[in-house]
Amino acid sequence: MAPDTVPTWVWLATLGAIAALFIFDFLTHVRKPHEPTFKEAALWSTFYVALALLFGWGVWHFWDREHGVEYFAGFITEKSLSVDNLFVFVIIMKSFRVPAAYQQKALLIGIVIALIMRGIFIALGAAAIERFSWVFYLFGLFLLWTAWKLVVESLKHTKSTDEDYEPNGVVKWFQRHMPTTDDYRGNALTVIENGKRMFTPMAIVILALGMTDLLFALDSIPAIYGLTDAPYIVFTANAFALLGLLQLYFLLGGLLDRLVYLGIGLSLILAFIGVKLIIHAMEANTLPFLNGGQPIEGLPHIETGFSLSVIVGILVVTTVASLLKSRSDARKLR
Image (cartoon, rainbow, N blue to C red; front, side, top):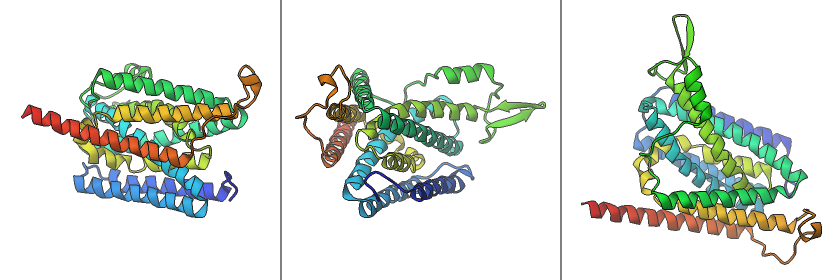
């Protein structure tokens, strides 16, 4: 395989396998509405993480070590951002009072929407990067701005799944203008009443999840492009991060409220990747008003292996610190 070229048949086989996994997920967990037990969620979460690690081993073995490291760095980063997304998913479920037995269908459809949108953003990002190297400046600055927002939000208040959900403009418009039922009708998205097609609250929940995923994609795609410029690695890392997110939602449950420093940890990761992107942009600089349009030399080169160590280190420290603080707070309340 050439350094960053993936044969078409590999792309098609990968897309087919990922689609098959989502169909399998639907048939196994969503076709029969139920609330997963802790054991069920733990087993399937372990299965999907093991599958992601096995795929990473395949990239390392059949491609090369460099792309293998890039995949693992991207997967860990995207999985961490996905865990942060779960806070909002829980808030949406609580706000719309989605019955536990029907939450799997809403989540899985939302996750599929997220993967489709990320696929579009990945393609657009790859095309932009190929034509305009200065796009890395925009990606880097955007991640630094996002990191700053996360820090400010984390310092203002502790993230909690008890917060209220504020629908965005698209969801509000749908609620005001589209005919909807007042209650859930099983896990159906639409029903016919008096000869008229009506949407159920389940359809609104899925729309809310999809719009939320759109915002999350704006952060996650620039972040992984800071770790690799291979579209195949970008896509597969995102796909495997989203696979198993359904089970992770039920597995973590109340644990999410205990990850009080996760926002700070993610902000540090995004800031680190943002700086890395800007350095990369300066190394390939073509902007005429900066250094006469010539690449800037003498900048530190950040290896992907080092990036992986930084990402894992930050996540370990913030997770341990979060659990210790939660334990300390619990003792004070006794």
